[in-house]
Length: 624
Ligand code: AMP
Image (tube, rainbow, N blue to C red; front, side):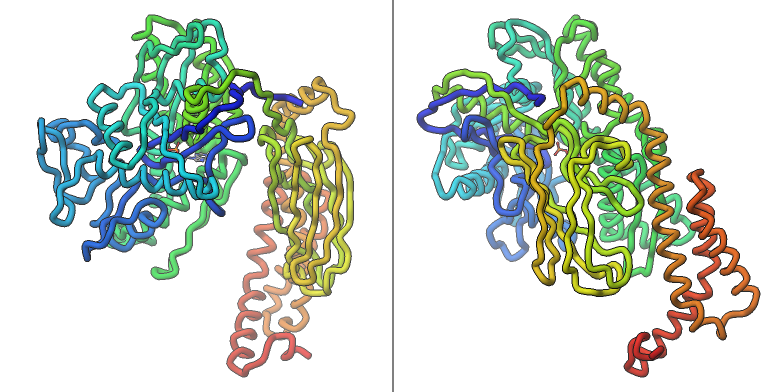
């Protein structure tokens, strides 16, 4: 079983919270059960958006998740990115004021203040409101235990005045600050790098709106910042903007100038772009789609990771410029760096990982969740300060992805490689043909796209699904890995509650070398696998479309002209022959042709449905 090393510090007396007070999101973690853990609240990942909304009627400000919704309705009451203003003078901040929708004023010592609905607030006071919310949720997640000691993280480049402002914010929030530590130091602590006798570390932090790179040295457990660089306006939002631009270009003829400026439309487009970007981090191709019912607008295109990479290349290159500056300021070259640590959600982008790896000539640490690693490190520091003792924890992770074979032979990965165990995940499936009463599940392990290239861990069948049309049944498949690495997969049909289950030991009979070989095979075959998977999925789709066409063709035949019927017949013949086509583009053509040829049939059927609806009958009743 592979592992990652973390500091484990045992027997702390009074726990100290670790808080990552971020520009976009904040997060609390604590040392619990022998390791640092993020404090999550019910049904939530634990992150609190660092945002505030001040209602017009003067009611108490709203903090966190709900502010995003409010921003859509009343953007003029919102405060975002307050961290940028901590300990800064009004004169320094001219270009930055748009994230706070209230007038800025000069306060004591030239420091910035905001006039919010008739009351003056310093950035410390606003940050304190965010910290209070984070603290409350953390205490709730701890079952009501009240802890008020905290370690808080700040960027390595924060000066004394910015650090002092952070301390003040925490004090105003009722927290006792045990230490302010640098974010890159926290990330290094989370990976246990303070265990090294000596060495140099590069921490590459690409978040939602900012990029920071820090070069640290470590000597006998003490970190020193050698240099920092970055770009305060470069992050995941810029990657989203590239995709928004692409859609606007495609939609040029369909969207008028007014819609293109409409904040609700732009927000929906931005969210679709972000979804697509994230999907491209785990897949080689994604659907980029958006439906805006109010303006009857539909947008859909497929985008390949390679297309996204081509767009994103210049942004990633800009981060390297900052890395070069940091290296040169530290008087080091890439070869002198011993460890590289990735922080921030945008480091999940494969192009980013690959570019960083090539630049520093070594594989970066990415085993921990990059959104959580700073808070986890703050919790480690909290534990050290609380008097814990040192140990090494071997944290087990899943060495190969686990999933299910899909109809057509593809693999749906349910638990991804490198997920820390214990863990669980659920995917929902449905039936493929009408009146199907059973589903066979093949549990597979590996990184390849087709089940045939993965290791089958076992098969089991769920029976007793009530007969219903294809696609109606809902079957939840839950994967659960316990602390010992045992996997159980349970399938449950939602309407009857019928279940079937299998227990397996995923690593049984697998050596580390075999795992390595399997991983290598997945890299070597990535493009080929992707094409074969696409062909397999298209075959399933063509089969389903052909069956649906045949089921309805006879009833619609009298309403279709001979040319259309001939067209459909030809497309069906090509569909029947598709089973032996293995070229992805050729088979895509067969599918598209079948869709084109059957459009008139769909129109006739829709017409029929509409008529029957008016007559108060369903199509089935009508055709009986
Ligand atoms: P952070 O500020 O560290 O929470 O980073 C948030 C940024 O990470 C946002 O721009 C997200 O869109 C981006 N992000 C989160 N998950 C992914 C992913 N899987 N692929 C690409 N970007 C991601």
